[in-house]
Length: 69
Image (cartoon, rainbow, N blue to C red; front, side):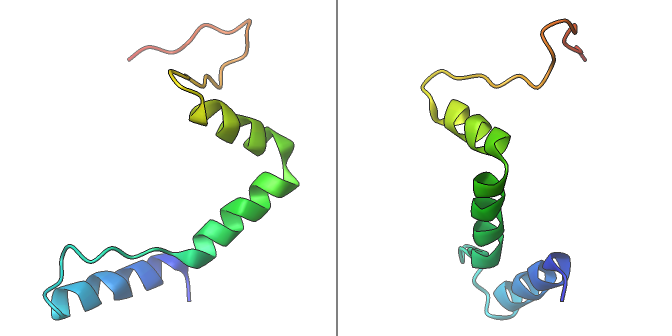
């Protein structure tokens, strides 16, 4: 069953039980993210940079101009 299908099931269950504020934590997603951080050091560096106070993580190269909307 795909993650989208599971999310739809959770949404339907919340609606059926009339519990819209029910917090659902996808443990398998957290596990996959932890494994990705362990496997690819860049993810770990980005995660650490995001945790730093007043941190802004930019994915542009130093020689690139940031894209503005």
